Amino acid sequence: MAALRDRESKLDTLARVIRACVDVLPVDGASISVMSGPRERETLYASDEIAAQIEDVQFSLGEGPCFEAFATRRPVLVPDLPQASVLAWPVFATAVHDLPIGAIFAFPLQAGAIGIGAVDLYRRRPGWLSGAELSVALEVIDIVGAVLLGLLLGEVDDTDGLRGVLSPGREQVHQATGMLIAALSITAEEALARLRGHAFVMGRSLDEVAKDIVSRRLSPLDLGT
Amino acid sequence: MSGRAPSRTERESRLLQAFVQLADTLVDDYDVVDVLHRLVDHCVQLLDATAAGLMLSDQRGGLRVVAYSSAQTHMLELFQLQASEGPCLDCVTTGEPVLVGDLSAETGRWPRFAPRAIADGFASVHAVPMRLRRETIGTLNLFRHETGLLSDEDLLVVRALADTATIGILQERAIRRSEVVTEQLQTALNSRVVIEQAKGVLAFAGDLEMEEAFHALRGYARNGGRRLADVARELVVGELRPEDLLTARHRPTDV
Image (cartoon, rainbow over the protein chains, first blue to last red):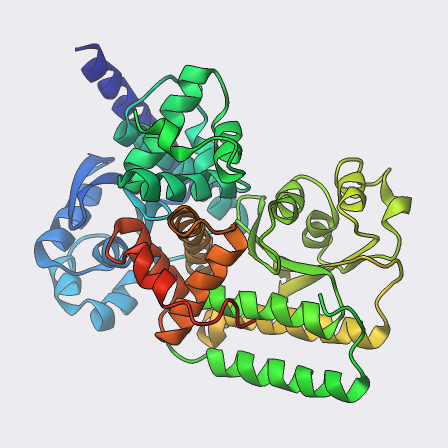
């Protein structure tokens, strides 16, 4: 029950982060989705009806910028949707023709091979973001990614710095994740979860544990439960 | 590390080779991360540098290392440190080259980076911006054991290589559409994460150093004409087995 409440409160936090993002940036709506399988996803939150429809239409038709971002795991940024979509996604273009959508920016959330989900932004009028707006958007996306990754891995506490996993300078964490995958025959998600769990139990940082594994001071086999 | 400066004709032929090879890689379905790795390797050979690395802007005000000539941990940490101070950060902030012939004179400017680089055996460092119009998207960083500035001619070579790297990342079509810069940069940054995960898989499975693991990964991708990031992902998610790559390892390296 407590875990469920915790999850609810995290989802509420995400919704607030996304609404703030919509307020601050020149976008009119946004949605968050999570990857529930290699080919499956689920919309967690949509800030308005149009944002919800953008998702629904694409995933029932199997085409569109958000669908493509999900399938290729690359950002798909379309500042002029009416112009671009006719050529790239004709069925989707017809389906949303009457909706006020000028631009769509779809950002997949991932940590290397770990698929987390996506943040999709839309604006009514066409146009790209300025440099400053883009960096705000990317920061928001990092925060959402870190919170979702925490939910995906199972929280150990609130200060375990998952945001950093998606940030610069954490190469050893990724290398150690790989070593655990090979040593224990587990998935990347599970490997990262064990690294965090071990760090938490030992009262150390994720980086310290990762560096010990990469430099072979600590065997990944010792994290095999 | 070449150990000695190449002669002029040797260098001209290597330079030509470098650009032909880089141009060849920029076909439709090219592999950005591999292109960048080839580039830093060329830098080391052409400019008699000890090590080279390439850092890209993460478009959030930070810098991330995406390719480096030596995968030794101390080298990696020297690049990681530059996300907060050092020639790379200064170069990206100002958009101008940062040329330091004697690192020991710069401990005041970079109190953490300079002593660390000196302790690792480096005496001089150069950082050249990767520029696209008014935006600086990254920096090419050279380390040398010897003190002294690069000659004007060498500096031209570094700049040409940095420009080639910029084109490599953005492709021609990207240069006209600024949102493509973001698509390419963000994808390159995530590719780097998958590659580090894959190095870890191989390092454990084959009892390899990270650098050897990288060479095994790259050798396999090149032999099969595959993208480095694709091979890395397949290895991490278990579609490829480490043995597939380790037994296919004919040459230890083909830098």
